[in-house]
Image (tube, rainbow, N blue to C red):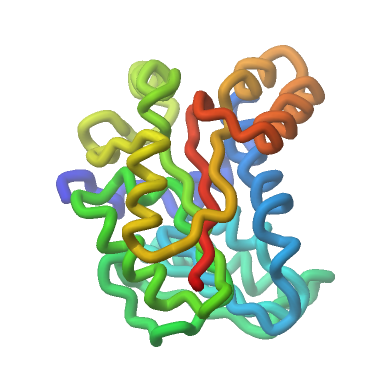
Length: 247
């Protein structure tokens, strides 16, 4: 692992969501819409929810429903410290969890029992790994039967390589190409990896074909376009999105 993930601020994604450039803000807020549509309907009080590579915890907190148990896992302690502070604040809110946990670990070696989670989020993690299939197998191991794994990763059969180059050139994020992103996925390769792990693919599509560019003109137009992208499951968006179920 050549990139120093400890060099990334623990609140990076949180600030990108709330204080970033309009396209950057939309990029992160659109994933919350994705969670609302694809994950939250399946969670209830008592559900155990794990995010592997949680970063600032945007998705984990969005998925947390009243009485559920969110579990944050990341390599970087500064991310876990920030997520812990956010989860503590939720304890007095309308979506108060029954408790929560934060653990420093990597997805390839989860210090967790078999079949212990109802839902796992693995968002833009696998492209950072030399052997992503190991983390997917580990995620499947700790899922309960009937549990769901949501996985997202850049789609290299889209405009993503151009977007990645532009973001790197403008220093809008820690350098990605060749440093963070070392495994490249296409729709067929991601779906095949999930099936080979023994998971059943319930949802497969992409987001962010036109919507991020529309966000530069109108946030309302961008949100409507994102809704269409989630519904029509096109293969051309910049981010692959899959929900797989353990039988």
